[in-house]
Length: 207
Image (cartoon, rainbow, N blue to C red; front, side, top):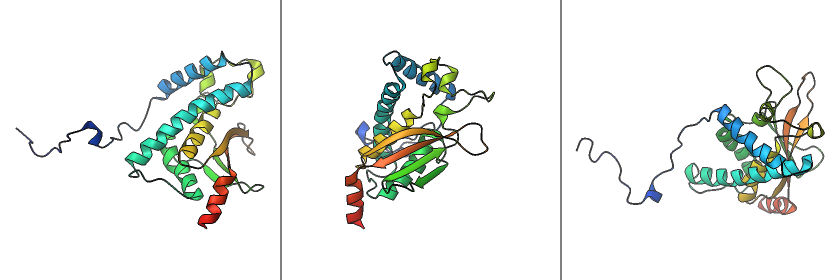
């Protein structure tokens, strides 16, 4: 047979390496699926806080699976054990897989030792459309009631980050916020990470 012996054979499908596959997903396809997710949950709640909580829970499940995939495919089942290591992993590796680039910034909070911030000027789920209108990517396809005008789709991404951190053994409260930028019409999206006390105690022991 032509090429016989040149292709490695696997007796079990579980032994096959995970392929990286296509690196990009159509933004239109994502917008459609994400809008369906938001619209469904919108019918189940009465306020913004509950809607954002539901999106965060959905993102959490995604984050847990992203962590498993990346650790198995790229890190040989090894996981980060230090605080700065896991933050760098989220800021760079996870962000690249999800959004095709590293996050714009990773900063430590100035008021609290347990707080860190990952910021994006144009987070995908909060990105304005090509005409520059004050509409997020999802809001181009979703009708948001006026009483939910401050709704932040970044809650979904906050959930993804929480899922990754929790699965890696770094429990944290993760929330999404709009932060005004000087000289800019649109605010940036900041993912605020507040680690649990046990994470800081462990980090102190490790030195």
